[in-house]
Image 1 (cartoon, rainbow, N blue to C red):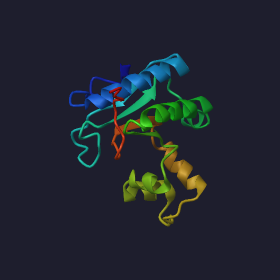
Image 2 (image 1 turned 45 degrees about the vertical axis):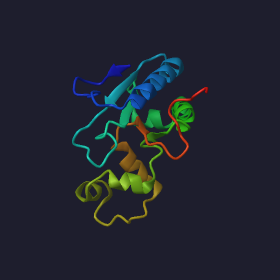
Image 3 (image 1 turned 180 degrees about the vertical axis):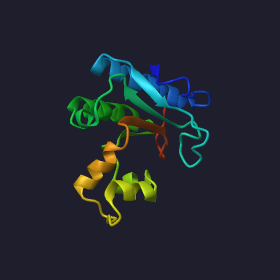
Image 4 (image 1 turned 120 degrees about the vertical axis):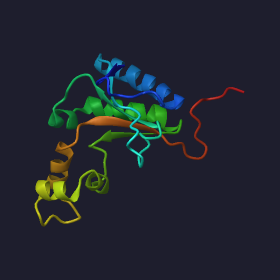
Length: 160
């Protein structure tokens, strides 16, 4: 696994996330013959996010896909689903952003001023597909992985 920059902080990541990063990197190496790139680890200022608690990371492949190429690249969606299938039962949530974000998730990513600039003054809270695509193009495609176990989900399988 590679790091996007020296500003990517892993000190404070929960051990479960380190396990997940190894899984993501192995799948990306197998699928794309490239290492995954960690773009966001612990983000101390992200209080309302699991990034702030060391329980979420963002990863992209080393290749810089253009947004439209990424969106229509079946291999990327398949790899994301493979990561999701492997980690989902172990307490992880995996989201391919921005493609798998709901319209309300997308709206929360932008300030009112930026939404107005991108969509016009009179945009409706119910967005059409063209407006959703406009918002998705503003976000950098990446795989968001967070450790947020639900009842009955264990990160480590036990044999006893």
